[in-house]
Image (cartoon, rainbow, N blue to C red):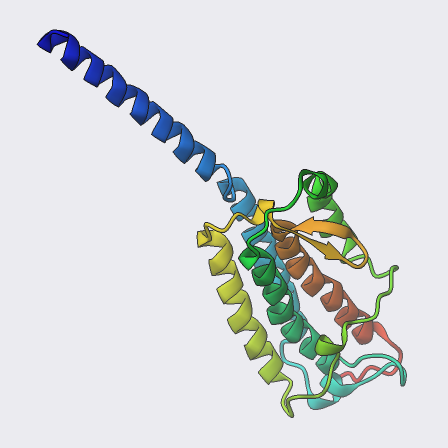
Length: 214
């Protein structure tokens, strides 16, 4: 092979290798969240965070602890549950991400179209569920503002995670007791929608007969 042909061959081989590397890189990039997915989740998380924080701003001790009935949660208990759930649900997501096994095609197919199901369905309080034992209110703090501070720290970190993560959230699937298989991104949406659900519960407490005016 002549020197000129050798150079041409090497040039073509290099170009082909670069093209294949680019294809592999594009494929890998397709496994992480798109910017649109990140923006949607972060916007939702910012929105539900504000909703919750506004709902508990400036409450008196009487308002924090008022119960509409013996089997109803107070606003303080709702806040404790919201704060505990923020770290608990994120822990579930991290367990999914750390699993060495990718979801099967069958499980992935079952998650299709569930982003909206999560965002719209989880806040629907016509459907009642029992909280898992680890995140039931246990009156862990004497000052409910401790729950608020815990929530703010965790939510800030979770939003930062969504913004920067390279984890393949769409490829990891875990079962939800009511919604069935959800991918890890949908679990992140659920984390945010869960905050909305129990903030609506806080607003229900405020509308209950006997709720203190101050």
